[in-house]
Length: 256
Image (cartoon, rainbow, N blue to C red):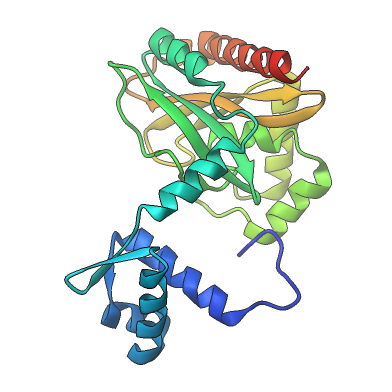
């Protein structure tokens, strides 16, 4: 469900994007598979596929449809429009090298956490995330760092739209508990997540601010076997907070 719903939706447009999203999630799909999944006639699905292929948004490889590279053109434009895009490379690289973990730049869009960029250290264990991944804000440390600095009214809108789905038994699923956690994050300046999005995965994040607005968050993540508990609790928050402040300073210099 989207954060906002229009009063009147164009059904054909919605169906087209349901097809696109299904093909994306399944890494390709055939006509019959799509007809079964969307409960539509094969002739109807064929019309959508033929149209999307003619517009160069799909490629047909032996009857199996895949997304075309035309989406890369749009995706690159969308990424470049994000205020922090292109600024974080140095910060992420330094953070990954210092911590031997995976460093992330995460932003919020439509009430979701979007993984915009990452740098993986040579010693890091790759975790569940990937660039472009969209997920709940209340699970990862980066999402909570952003959520904590949004207006309460927007937080309520996000919770009304998406709820608090559990990814593991450690995920916060109670609103009162979440607001207590967000208050604590605002006080200390950073967020943590332990096994809340995937068992065995931990992360620390800090928000990137500019003139009272949260632009995104910098985070590091790794497995519980890889991250020493004392380091995770006492040293890593300071390292990540300094990295977020450095990125905020770079943004201010460019836009100040």
